[in-house]
Length: 72
Image 1: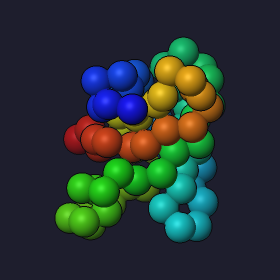
Image 2 (image 1 turned 135 degrees about the vertical axis):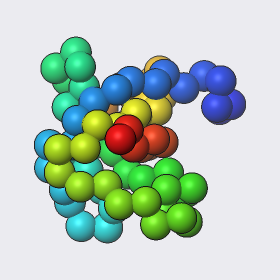
Image 3 (image 1 turned 90 degrees about the vertical axis):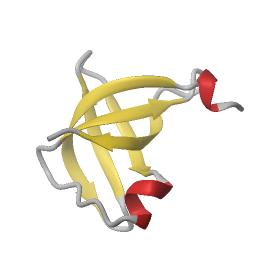
Image 4 (image 1 turned 90 degrees about the horizontal axis):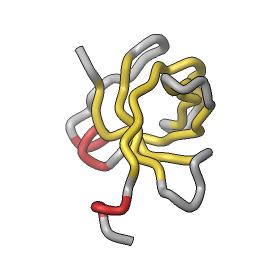
């Protein structure tokens, strides 16, 4: 799937799991189980509880995604 097909949603980190996995509550109120994208992991961008993030989700499964950006 191309990166153009992904849907970007803003949300807030609600729970932190081991291994770089997070539970993100979106603005629409849904929960997305997300992991860190490669650039965030490579440059060691810290994502903690309560951070505002952008999550890229597939149009086929809206419950799983990848954190692509941490807002300041």
